Length: 109
Image 1 (cartoon, rainbow, N blue to C red):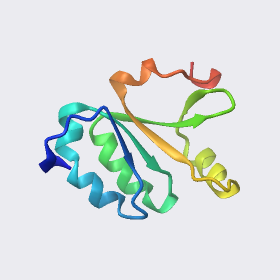
Image 2 (cartoon, one colour):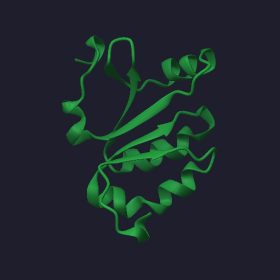
Image 3 (spheres, rainbow, N blue to C red):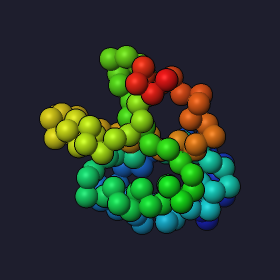
């Protein structure tokens, strides 16, 4: 993606286990433009995802459709939701400086 010279505000990644490679290929784009990045939560992929984004000062959120709000990512809660849901759980990676603009659930307000 870095080679495409795009200026994204949002990036959705859905690459079935190749997250690390995709993230490495868009590192300069993320550094330069600070987009929101949506990626599927998969417990086995989290170490690489967390390392990539924490280094760039991103925060992690999970969206709650029932309350139309975001909550800060907590591994135990996300894993439980992932294990008990027929749907994929999306992880929202947001630059820390943009996180205050998100509608947050009561626990994160």
